[in-house]
Image 1 (cartoon, rainbow, N blue to C red):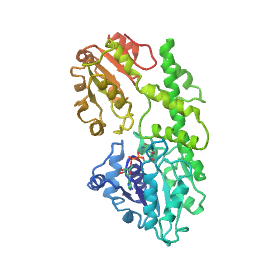
Image 2 (image 1 turned 45 degrees about the vertical axis):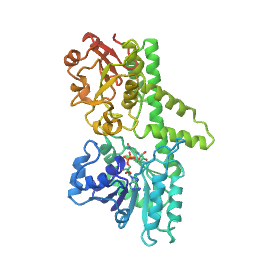
Image 3 (image 1 turned 120 degrees about the vertical axis):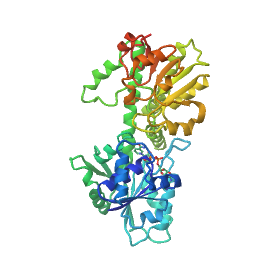
Image 4 (image 1 turned 180 degrees about the vertical axis):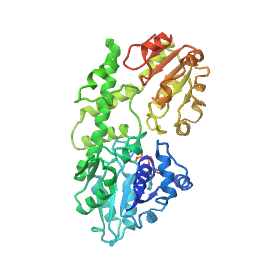
Length: 442
Ligand SMILES: NC(=O)c1ccc[n+]([C@@H]2O[C@H](COP(=O)([O-])OP(=O)(O)OC[C@H]3O[C@@H](n4cnc5c(N)ncnc54)[C@H](O)[C@@H]3O)[C@@H](O)[C@H]2O)c1
């Protein structure tokens, strides 16, 4: 099948590459000239495990192309995926300017005689499919009413395991009333659900809401556990034990119960906000969502008072090693990363920071400039550091050389925002060790 993917970011590049991998001819479009030039010269633009190999193979075999021209990309395409940004607008709602802008452009190019399925993969509020349809129809001087169908096909991939998630999705959600579009979408997705995972067909509104409901529910789980962790610290309980105790109940499940310094990324923060705004617009006060956002903001700063207390409430002139910048491991994505909030809080209080992250240093540098030092490796970050702070649970931080850390740190203090180490072991090694929801070893 011939496919166009509009928007070649995290979702677009993974979508395009994985569809090419199953034999489709894919053309990805982006307005970012630098990005398209890089991709065309065989250079991958994001870090995502396993993606580069598939990207290079499919490009070499002529199934994966990149262009800045929307017209060229959709000329022969039967299916057009929209993988465009939907950032939060000022009022928290999803800003649809990218989606509707492209819908307008499509209206000017589409021809009545050449049927296409326009698939929305971006996360968008209920009613967007109808807006896209209206925008396409209005911007055309021809009658396009039979020339296309709109499908809502929200994407559930997780950054860090995006290729695996795309190639073997838990489920595929397809929202449309069009039998013709259903047939095409079924054909396209059949290779991805051979193990029997469901393709769930529904109306557009339900498909659009499903994505928000999924992300908001996961955010609820995270904020709930972060509040339990707060309570553990006050009542002398250990959140690890509580987590294990509740996670073995099948109704609760083991996953997504790890407390930490808050969720980040390009999805949870904006999607929870957008769902709250959608609810408000529908005259419904979705109370849990506001609580989830409030808890997350508090949690992002959870370590700061502990760090300050360790230095008698004055960290001016202190120097910190920071391990981890990305919002979670195995990605270079730093959007809304808790590490960035921590850098702001530390430097605002007069401290300096040397950071190391296996993949996210370049993106962070673009954001922070020379506000912090970027270290060569995790131990280089410890040079002259008064204490170590951990913000992302990269695997390589899990079993470090503790003797080396001890020798390098001035105050032997570790503030662990991801609960990587065993508190009892840290006590044995004579560290000052504070984590989230577990007894402090001081
Ligand atoms: N990142 C994720 O993990 C994830 C997962 C599921 C769903 N989503 C949703 O998917 C959508 C895209 O997210 P993303 O993380 O891939 O965003 P992104 O910012 O990484 O990529 C978007 C791309 O679209 C391009 N673009 C903007 N306007 C364009 C235009 N007019 N024509 C062509 N290209 C254009 C940008 O240059 C950019 O490369 C969002 O709605 C997001 O909520 C993201």
